[in-house]
Length: 174
Ligand code: NI
Image (cartoon, helix red, strand yellow):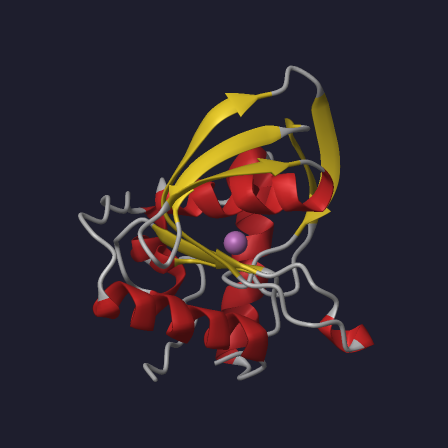
């Protein structure tokens, strides 16, 4: 399996726009598997291609509670697209594997419907609310070069990036 390393801010690849996938082949499936592994190892609940230095529109998520030994429930998406979003908003604390140890409240549409291709290339529709809704919107943002800290004031954003840089310098994160 491909062994991916998670990239941290302020790496410019996190600000790039990922390009659509033409088809789901073994390479894309191997990428999805490798990304799931990197996400489980971290551990985290979502990971987008940019975060492992790839610029195609692929993301993975798994909201199962592994600490409670719940069975894994991976969701792999290529070319995800929000086709509907609620007017109602939801506020939830978010974090990001590319911005370790930093958390902030982010406001997003409470419910979304997301069209995507699964790992077999079949078109699927995900209807999400709650944490799954925040997670899928957060990961799609990554594919558009947007991070959750971009919703915060520049003061807060810069502070969080500086903290991550400091942790890197101290060897707390690699
Ligand atoms: Ni993230």
